[in-house]
Length: 117
Length: 135
Length: 247
Image (tube, rainbow over all chains, first blue to last red; front, side):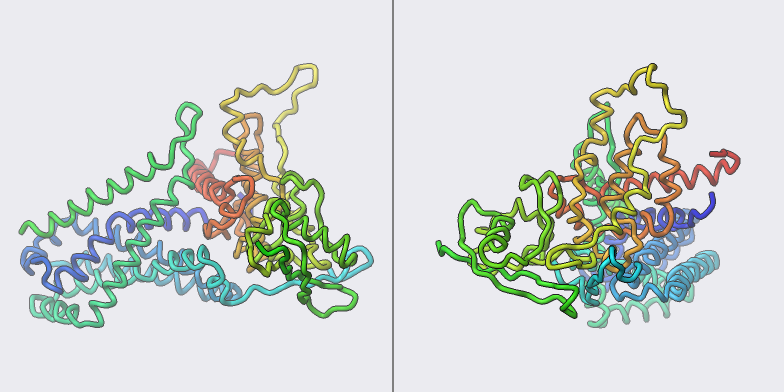
């Protein structure tokens, strides 16, 4: 394979995350960020939300959504920093921040979802 | 590039401005599209905060809901909604370009690729809302 | 309609000037004049020292690309009257080193173009007596759009990534690589992928999409690059699943 990079892998994560985020995130932001706090809609109770989250399928759903969304962010934000601020020479720092942040978020999501009572 | 020689004369290389993305509407749209990723990361943080509060108990959960009612958080989430929808629309509209699907040697029209994406978006959003609102 | 319009033209003499400046010329405004006609009027009647490239005057040779009011344009296909009442600025193509006045140095592009091997690659060349490589109209149709490129470099002038990182292979060269990749007679996809799958190849592209917008031949380089990323990603998965699959 020689000099081929790991860019294809990062790009696949970016694309998968982008697709998932495009389909799923708007409704989540609308409900949990606006409709429930502002009382436009009556949100689920604490108990029913906890019940929902106890199901393995829900946990898997949130884990995949969070992880891929984070890697989507990492990839896009990295290039935004490169090109928007013209700081490509800091690429090692930027890569560590972006992909490291996404990896950290993945671990955190796994821990939180795993440890639900 | 090599310096000036007899056959490679001196040239002037203009520098790209730091604010190049303000120079043209298509550039600005691009940078806004890229910045949508920040709000996607913010969504993940918010979700993890919710899960963590749920885990810690009803009191913590209620406290988080109080926090989310603060005007600054409402404003932030309204801005987030704008950006994540912007992400969705730009993502779906660019998808056909990246795919170039051909059926029997003929390119498939962009609408045939874009429309199912929008339909899936509506259907899945409705399903998520139903799951959360029924109980 | 006014009968004259002002042109604001970039002037740069490498022997004398430290950096480029503008010079204004008043030219007649004729309904059927394109920007190139106005420039030729200046050169013939006003100031013979103005330098610019042009040849065919009909959107085929690709040599008269310049920034007209900040937009990359073929000056032979851009009417002066569109910019009423003026002034119209005419600058050399962005992102390239300026050699003189409106002339830019495109050697960087020419080098990159050769690197992506834009020609038919065969594993084994067929002998002439065995006849030509046949192709159906449908097969020819898959790459026709990409083959329309006239190397006018408007897409490079529109591409911020190329402006920021001159190592980036850039729109036209990648679109031309894709033109040969999608040609049924070609067998060089993997060879090209080795070059283009490197960081400065396709991955630098952030899909701004302006290359496609400015292309006078509707080549859609932005689309070509994203399709290329998809191909590279598929190849990457393949090599992951079958590391022994020697190429």
